[in-house]
Amino acid sequence: MKVTPWEVEGVVDYSKLIEEFGMEKFEDLLSEIEEPMRLMRRGVIFGHRDYWRIVEAMKEGKEFAVMSGFMPSGLPHFGHKMTMDEIVWHNQKGGKAFVAIADMEAHGVRGLSWKKCFEIGMEYVKAIIALGLNENSVIYFQSANEFVKNLAFELAAEVNWGELRAIYGFESETPLTKIYVPAIQAADILFPQLKEFGGPKPTVVPVGADQDPHIRLTRDLAARASIFSFEEIEGGLRIRSRKGNEFLKELESLNFEKKFYEGHVDVFGEKKKIEEEVRKIEIEIGGFAFIPPSSTYHKFITGLTGGKMSSSKPESYISLLDEPEEAKKKVMNALTGGRATAEEQRRFGGEPEKCAVFELYNYHLIEEDEELEEIRESCKSGKLLCGKCKKYAASLVVEFLKDIQEKMKEAEDRLDDYEVIFPKHVGSF
Image (tube, rainbow, N blue to C red; front, side, top):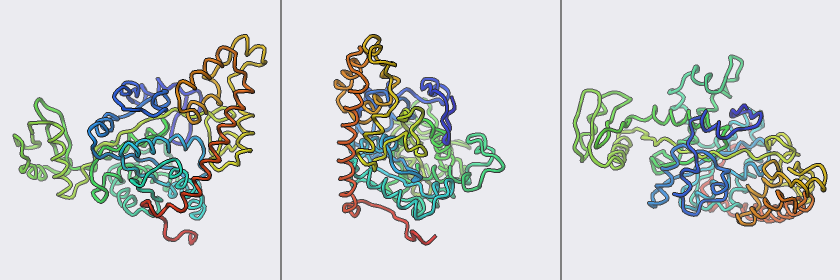
């Protein structure tokens, strides 16, 4: 098993990933979430970091954000739709959505022209709007977002070459553009917490497990770039300054019991309230006061031909822009968990856990859990044969594509309803 931001190989053991990457099991939080989305209910979202912050914000009706991005190196497909669905769900639960079109990465790492990045990127913009993103959102192209680029420069000062090499395996031949990408992505993730966009707030980043190195690095950078740090003590918090002890005197205005020491301040009272007030002070004196970003991790969707669904293999995925009849053919040719013959299928039953078509049902096509379980049991018992199952899946895909493509056309006329940061010089590079 190999799982990195640029490469996934072998059979992925998600339990092992949780252990190796130091994630937390998502199922442990599931009972705390009101009306969880299907990817949560079905274990497709399997891990998290600090998602309790988001659960708490949703329960208390407090401000939070959801942020993720898409590299426009290929057309949006069902693999991207999974992340879009997660963004839209959080957005509809009250979170402000921040959607990045990673044109800088596509241009610098994949070599696409700026014009091509914009053209493909707009398909992602229309797709997520068509899937239900509401106006409580910011959509932007990296190259056009001065806040992100300036923040990336600030964050780059907090990480060195040795650390990047250890995390990403960069070598002496690695282009500087690719080396700079982690700083840009960290800036994307922390962008929702800038004071110009409401200041520090819990922010969740839904991603595949291969993107966890970016999350871990960003969580570290969020702490390093902020002035104050927090340690729990009995009855309160211990506050330290990463930028020099002279900043500790700013905490004198805190309306809590406190004790000043040479290198820290102990503050006593409700820990959440103390942290909120300290972050407000940091913002007032020009700091970032970032809250470590939360994250959720979803399983990889299997390509229709086996392996991971990949933009570089058109036969492995269904694009949201595919002609419905072409998508139907792809489904009918998909790898299944069926037996070699219909007779064996009836006798031994199928294996839905090994079936790319069943994954389409599970991840995308069927909302009701009861219907999904009926298909699963019919497959395992041998009552449902692959041909009939594929035809039903193909019909659902055709219906979905016709609907989403119509809504994407409508989205073109609704762009003015959204805060979108467009590149200003498309086509002139």
